[in-house]
Length: 300
Image (cartoon, rainbow, N blue to C red):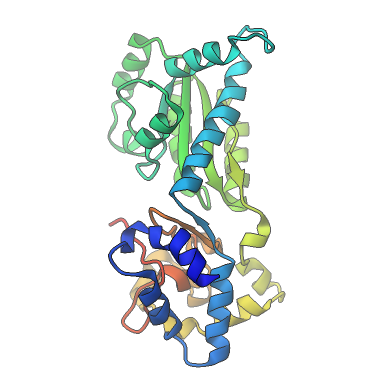
């Protein structure tokens, strides 16, 4: 199984494409000493939700033919049984402004896979929130006669990063319909973004894929005394990660919280382009005495 997955998906991991997966796997397993602990690591690896290039292309098509198409049908006055239905809807989609929430979503790939001809300016709205001029954004929307804005994101963990960006977009363009469509979203992020969309009159939230609770390990459950085998394993080996106190202080977390990932999401998700910080750090954390399986490219 490991051999098969290595060839089919794990070797696709971009941040380590010149460091063979088999070698990374051996180094990762050697982070622990006992056979039982190595078996536990292998078991966790086999339960990882790995999203490769082909899977992302499938999600691109799903978001376009499913989420965006349905959303456009709500305002297009067409016969749903007509032969030219798809042509008319695609024309309307091409008139909309399709943008990423952050630069991690590869908007050019999304447009190419779906054969779309969106506007030539398609900035990520996280950067617009930080550096954009609201009046210029509104002027661009007015000049281009934009009525619809589609906000895409490849992965949403806790939703904290997307929340402020979506609110900024909704407040900047109050008369524009906005579709918020993350391709993959964790339960925590799903609940948060649902609440955000409910607060905003012009935002519709419709994710392509919401991951099941079974794909996560809950820090809250351990606090309540419900400690499963995996949770107990993570807490037992936490000192082996070699986490510096300054890092814990920076994120204002304890070591017990840290081992469950950012915002204690406890995810087992890896994308071919990077490993989310919401994923369990045993997969991506790098320290003097801990070799990561999927080294993460961090932002400064």
